[in-house]
Length: 370
Image (cartoon, rainbow, N blue to C red; front, side):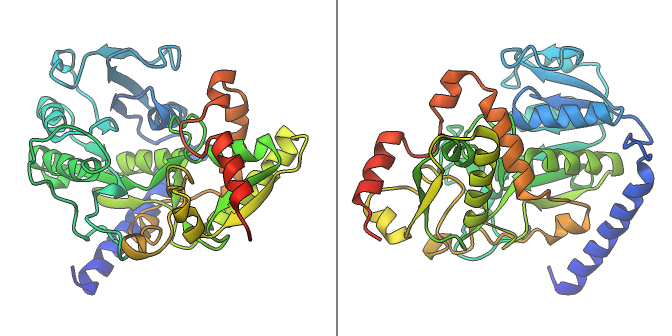
């Protein structure tokens, strides 16, 4: 896309953002209540989307298997089914918009879209920045997406997740038409209720106190989005019927791993008050690599900006900013995540799904020579 066409698109989106201010009353409630169907709805981002939708005066209905967080939002009607083929419960029902935040393979997205197309005019699909074919350089929404040699593959793993999400986007557009689909490509989604523990690892580790391993250099950039900011952008898009594809993530350079660690330490000291003061020990990327410490999994949120990952934390998101995306201060997300983490059952607090295990970190600290 040439620069003139991009500027025109962003101008039109800016007009939509201005119109949004008029669409909400001073209480934050939508001027026109909507009937929203969420495919899923009871995990992480679905919970935040539901809370915000209800607060704005919309009605929400869940479609899922009824297995997860059945005690959350008991007032929300639930249609029991399975998007892997058991969609009969959706027949004959109409809504103003559907949020698909549980689509991972194109066959399932296509089936749901075909079922809903005649009775639901707007399809919002939550995709991922992982769709991009390469992160050797910064991406924008028009960058090439990953491809699969066999597009019938439905095994979702590290190699297939991104290309499958790209195929899901295509399936939604083919059924609904591009003029009726909004695609959101979030980066790392963080905040309270995160069941991956990736972002949570840092405030949780600081809350344990003492010296702890920190990756690379404090100035290394990271990109992320609070689930509540993602929810707000999604609801805005449905209320204003904003169509298109948007990278939904913090601006390149806005946040660093140093800021994340520092805010985690500050939150831990004020909320958890550990016996030993939390103290990060910054370990250069070459040392971590030599020790077999993996970016993103062992050191969550962080990836060194080198080689094939040079553009990983530099994804363009100005299109979403013009359309109204707002990113809250990192300190707010850290504090709220730590408070949520400390309220979890002990088994969940003590065994996180991401980050270094205590024994491995102890050895790493012992082996490190600044």
